Image (cartoon, rainbow, N blue to C red; front, side, top):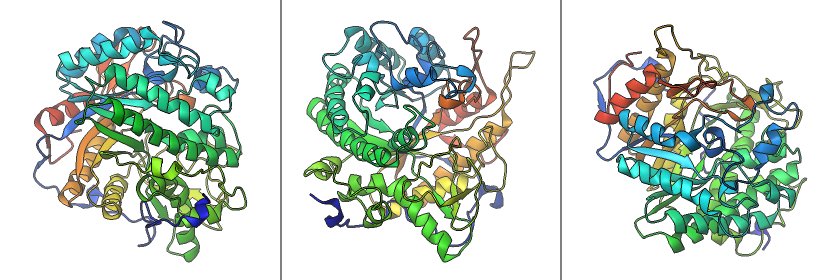
Length: 501
């Protein structure tokens, strides 16, 4: 099948914003109203990822992942940090689950380490690897916390990368087999499943700009990786449906971009269209329409003819899911014909673009309060994004699977961590979610990123996103003021009228 001949039924996954430059109905411009109550059954949780928190990198048969290798490549990770120990969640999970219960969390979204289950990405599962996730799941259930499992959060077994990684089709086939192994072990206890977390990052930061593992810089490889990640999702959905009870929910999580033009010029509108295609519709087109959008294929025609898309692939990718996971941190502002700012797309700067075929588009950092990541605090982006997905995919349930902020947190002499900036951030974004629900968007849960301060990928341990402060030398956990604030919201389902930060 030639994907160019398979026209999508809709070419928009999240429509480009065309109503002027840098607009948004920010909560700061709204009068304070009454407390907002979330729907009954709304799921309140926190999230982590295996490589960022587990540690125990060489224990119980775990094989190396691409992040183990990347961390040992000079200059790739700040301070030469790595996840060998991380925050030792592998050994401290019982205490961490007890802390979740103390905070009143209703759910915990964790990821399964592929090389812990299959050290080389092939063959039978390592019993000790699966046993950890079984014990973790049992501990969560014993505390009344819903386990939410993500099969892949970027830790590809190094052996599969040695064979070509995500640009190779075989990796998707191996992922389907891995999904079946995990589903067989945990399917009777885990009710909510996510196949992939943010495949955009895996494809375009891992194989395009090279700022994430495995650190490659080949635009064609990035596009091939994107397709094979889509295919891997489809293979995993099939495996999960075959193994899980009918009541289980299956999803995928995307870091959909809220792309906005710098000005209302035609050139900037086209820049929005291009980046929307590469950040959103490269995934939502196959997932929901069974086709790659024509403009994406045209934009990248000088790089590839997309012949790596084979007959039957898109039917596999577009298998129904039960909800879509949405990760949001910051809007993306673009222009055409101007010089942008390095790193203004929200990612570490590189001499190589993560935007194949559109590397001439300029990115701009919008004005306003920023987090420690240099990301502007703009809850309107989340509100607009949720409304757009709802408009484009009516009837599709959504879950906020990641949202949060890094700040320069520290422990006071009295042993407390005061983070009023994070409370304001959370209040604004939860208000945005509530307003989207009032607008008719079916949002069913919110997971704060992250439960714990942890290894923040190429930033090492220099950025703290956690609800809970971690002293990396002693592994002491200290809930931040924002954790107590979020705990009250989670327990009551009520967002107070003011942030109380």
